[in-house]
Length: 234
Image (cartoon, rainbow, N blue to C red; front, side):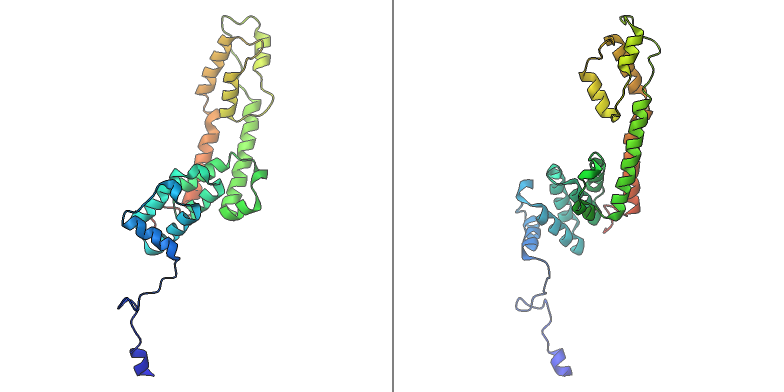
């Protein structure tokens, strides 16, 4: 028995006794294509192929090919669902991909997040998403109810009372959406001069930009708590 064990062929010693790899041949071929310079455009590779390539690079720690796959994912980021970006960023430690997915996911109504999406992003990320969404909605309502008062009307304002009434907002709007809406509409009895004055007030208002700061802070906190670092394998 001992002699039989010693006489077993050594894996990798020859072509006839190669080292067995459990990875799919197609994925390994992608790796070889990159190593030997036979690469295509971003449209050449599917989401599944790039995901498999990242899994392979996570296993063999090839930084150059990993960056190659990440670059292709980033080029095609607009074609992937945000939940897929979050999963890729989380599973393969890509902070910019994770952040891109999470920050844009907050712009989507909660009711549009399916069970499949929830499973993709994971429970911890989903809970953070729900809490962040609730805080943003609360902030949106506060901002909508506390629009700045016109303290001094412009010289071309013919009816200050009517001007103030038409400036008042009734429906909650995110800051960026409200500004776009205001810039494109007429304010009824509100003069153009008063309108420009209030836009200047809004541009100086730190509170109106709280939402952007809050989203960035939540995202950075998640990246830290989940250990999503781009140099984890170096």
